[in-house]
Amino acid sequence: MTAAPKRGTRAAPIRRAVPGALSTQECSAARVPEGKSELMLHDGGGLYLRVRPSGRKTWVYLYGSRPRVRVVNVLPYPELTLAKARLWGAAQRDMLRTNAADPVVKAREARVAHTTARTQTLWAMCEAVWEDMKERGQISWRSDRSAFKHIPEWARTMQPVHITRDHAEQILCEVRDATPEGSKTVKVLKKALSAAFTRASVARAGTNAKRKNAALAAFGVRDNPFLKHDLGIPVGVGGRHLPRDEAQAFIARLLAEPQDDRRDLLLLTLYLAGQRSAQLAAATITVEAETQAPCLLILDAKQRGDTPRPHVLPLQGPALDLLAGRGLLEDGAAIFGVDYVGGHALAKAAGKLCARLVKEWQAELAAEGKTFAHFSKGAIRSGASTGLAQLGVGDQMVDLLLSHGQKTVDWVHYNRWEYLPEKRKALAKWESWLSEPVPAPVLDANAGKVIPLRRAA
Image 1 (spheres, rainbow, N blue to C red):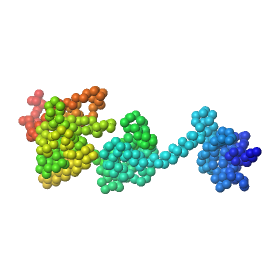
Image 2 (cartoon, helix red, strand yellow):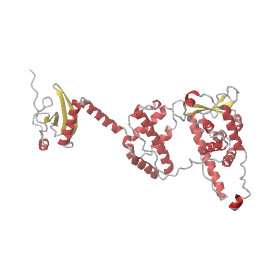
Image 3 (cartoon, one colour):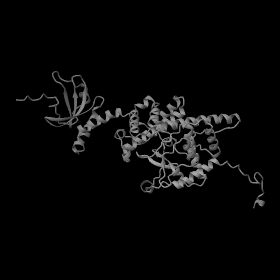
Image 4 (tube, helix red, strand yellow):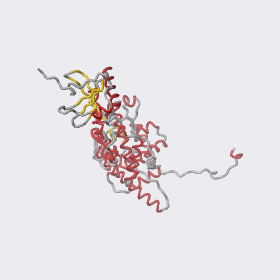
């Protein structure tokens, strides 16, 4: 015959018929009697105070019947007071009465979420972003990883969902003040963190099938706190463009340099109306089917989706002469012998050459008492867009030449025409614009004179 369980244990707790029977004094004075492993004091409605021989007291909620009594644990006493424990017990009873959820399962999910939240730090999200970018073949993950290293230690352990705009501004301000090149570093970090939060929020929303990532979705990011912060940092040269006289003078300086891949890449960027240098460096030669004329095939990976979009440009004029001099007009030949990864490295080296030439140019003008605004190779692209517009080239053709993505249904799904004849005409206008001398301004004969209104009428 099986012995009856001892009263006051989990199998046979001390039952009290009246809810709310415990008092604060009784909870504080409760001790486990000698010879027992624990003491269960019933407050009513399934809420118990479990007392251990060590003196530890924990609130538990029991439901079900023997031999399978289910237990839900919560914070210990007196960290959770008697009044708050009764509210918690009432919530468990309501959960059972409405059949909303199993209290044990709900408590287990809460513990898992709490444990997971401690590992879901900003630094862990950055690592998940690195892995996502590496899997998608996006070479910029290396620069983002270098930028993330400047995140302060206190911010690395924060959960991304708890980072507010105030936290974001504090992070950026600390990086700006702590690094030698504060302005440059904080702009790169701001861009990288903003992209990371955007990736995590898109993955959580699940609205883009091509951006699904379970690791990023688990962080629960809903917004981007790193957007639109005014930190008193100058915008820089992003709005700079090259007018015709500066573009022509820059070409002359490039031609005076020793021939190498960096110089030729900058020249091709100018001759071909400001193509993206990293993509241009990895371009290959293709042949037009109808005319058998050589063209340039550029794979545009700077877009949504995993498959690069082909961008074909006709070769003519100085661009054709430059590639012919390099002996690179065979079908399928890589004009610089590098892939997309190597193209980024070559584009970075070309950017350094551009910066050196501009710095020397500025020094020469300073000796003559003149000033000259600094520009980067990105100004070549904006200068081409501005110059093509001045030549009367339509907005749509400018977008096609610069490989801007077209978002209409016809362009995305149906229209497969490369517009090579139209591109050839637009590039011919651009090449003439680059080679022709800049006309001197013509002043009216009456310029500077004061003319009476009656005579002018």
